[in-house]
Length: 331
Image 1 (spheres, rainbow, N blue to C red):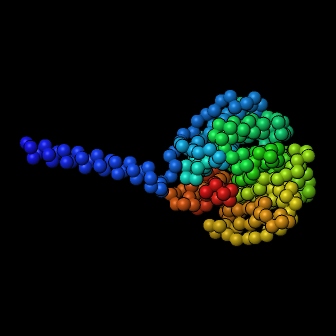
Image 2: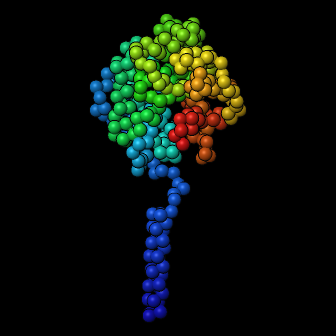
Image 3: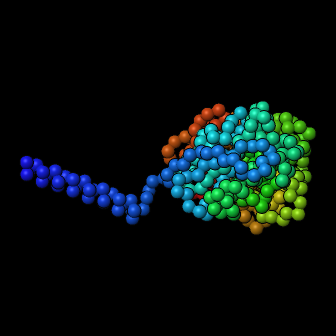
């Protein structure tokens, strides 16, 4: 009995010591694991919400102050929650430490749950859906004590077109925009119809395109957001000409020409970079050969992988969110 009790006490002592060692290691040794995951939550009362949108957000557990914010806008027939996870943005938020705002469209506004990028009342500074998204962004920056100089916006399809809207209407808020299968600012007005814009494009010179952006915030002198575009070459919903027009629009705004200053390939796809007269990159494009209408994703656990295949979330071995985040210095 005595020998057994002593052995029992020795075993308990060893267990306690192991727990203490593990606790000390957790407290003092560098962590190599990802940041603890959070949950997507809905936020109400974020402002007057003239566009009648819904606000969702993702904040990793224990996120410190001063971190960036990414606003990610879903495409038609999608919803905010699914887009946040399927695009890979919530995974990257955990991996790199930033928060995500996920605006949500409603069927009451648009039967297909598309953001209304083609409605004049929803794309002007201080009005409609654009103002609602701006209010969500402001709420997130305040709530997380984020770095206001590191706020970015991106989206797919109608969300990509709305990304261009936010870049034009609020260039003082967003440092960069990532347009995925989207359209230039004011394209529906320039073409006379959103469908002509999507399927054919609008006939505008670079200066005319740029003037549409400059007219969205009269008197603003910069700095302007940088532009990144992802576009499938086999996209028959938003024709690739819209990527070319986005480049024409935003290179003009930045005072750059329309000739690429650097060309290479990323994951086998053509990648072009455009620089302003001082040599600073202001626009870049990823032309995804053979891809249809959707967001590029690359499911997996690798360092450059993210996203999940789903409707309009296309596995092409390149994750657009990862490339955007890397370009914005989030990782």
